[in-house]
Image 1 (cartoon, helix red, strand yellow):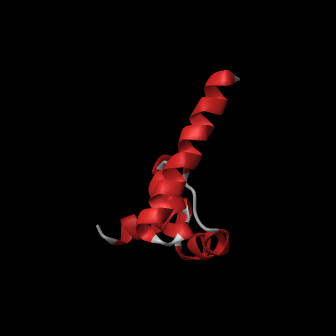
Image 2 (cartoon, helix red, strand yellow):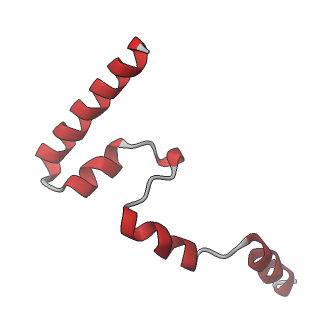
Length: 66
């Protein structure tokens, strides 16, 4: 648990530093958060799912290319 608290303290510090550089909270958060976690702004999470093809659609599109 102590290691997690140290990690969170460092992450908060990095976000604050990024904000001071960028002067934009959204950019600061997403420049610090790991991309592999799939973090997206709340309003954009639904928008991305509407535009991303489902696996079924993607397979169908691949078969059209042949």
